[in-house]
Image (cartoon, rainbow, N blue to C red):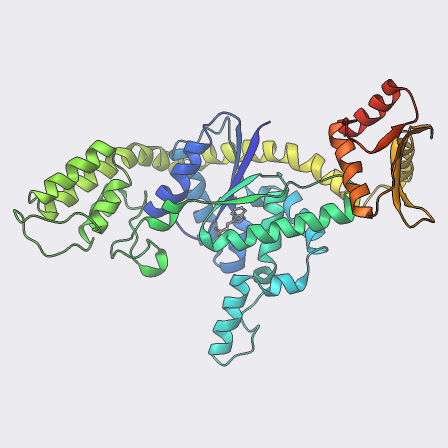
Length: 427
Ligand code: TRP
C-alpha cells in the first residue's frame, strides 16, 4: 500500500536556505521514493491568520510555489496545490470544529503564547487573538485529514498540532464512523536537520533573528553578501583553524559530500583563510542553487506557467477531496432529502452480515455467540468471568478466523462458520 506524506508552508514570506535544507530538499528527495504519494501545499488560508497585507501574501504564495518546482519537485508524481483552491478544506474544517473540544484549543502553544504576551503587556488575555488564530489547529487538522496523510514532516513547534489532529480524527471516527475509520491517524516527522542549520550569527536560521541566507531572492549577489556576513573567529590566513563548531563549516556540510567535508576541514586546519573559505562556500551553494534559481526566475517571470501547474495540482487534490467530503457530509447527516433511504439501506446491509452477539446470563457470566446472516447459530462461546475477555475473543476471531484454541463450540458446518468469519475480514 502506498503511503501518504503531506506538508504545507505558510505563505507569509520568502524562503531562506534553512527552509531549503530543512524542509524543501528532504521533501523533494522523499517524494521520489517508490510507494510514496506526496501532497505539498501553500498554506495560504493559514497565512491570512497572521498577514493582512494582500500583496505580500499573494507574492509569497507565488514565490513558494515557484521554489517547490525549481527545487526539482516532479509535479507529475506529487500533488502541489494551494490550500485556498480546495474549498473542501474549510468545509471539512467546520465539520471538525464541531467535534473539537474548546478546552483542548485553549492549550495550543501558539494561542497560549499570544495570551501570555498580552497578559505580560497588561492587556486582556485575548486582546490580540482572532478566531483564526484560535482555530488554527483545526484548519491544520483539516489539511491533513482531507488527504488521510500518514506522515507529516514539520518543525518541532508543529508537533502539538499533529497530536491535536489525531485527537480530532479519533473523535470524528468514533462519533460518526459506525465502525468505519474515516481518518487515518497521522504522525509527525521531525527532521533533525530542520533545527540545525545555523544562520549568519550561529543561532538557528530565522527571519526573526535577521540572520538568514536567502535562497533565490536577490540572486548570486545576495548569496555572496550574506555569506560575507557569517561570523567566524579572528584567525588570520595561514593560521591553523579549528573547523568544529564553526557556522561556516556547518553550512558547508549541508551542501557537501563526505569527501568535500573532509577536504574543507583539512584545508582550514592547514591555514585556509576565512575569506577564501567563504568563497568556497559560495561556489558550493551556488553550484546547486544556481541552476534552480534559473528555473525559479523563469517561473516568477511567467506566472501563467506556474498557475497552470497549480491548477493541475488543485484538480488532482480535488479528485480526492470532493468524493471524500461527500462521504463525510453523509456521515454527519448532511444529505439530500431524496436520500432518506441511506441509513435504512446501510442497516439492511448490516442485517445481511453475520454478527457476534455478546451478552451476560443470569449466572453473572459473560458469553458471545456468532449468528449467520439469516440468524442461525454458528458458534457458542464458553462462559467468561470478565466481559473484557469475551470481547477480546470476539475481536480475535474477527481478525484471525477460527483459531484452534478458541473457547467455543461449533454449532454448524465448518464451511459455514469459516465463511461467516471471513466476512469480517473483508470489511
Ligand atoms: N502550520 C504549519 C507551519 O506553520 C503550516 C501548515 C499548515 C502545515 N497546514 C499544515 C504543515 C498541514 C503540515 C501539515 O509550519
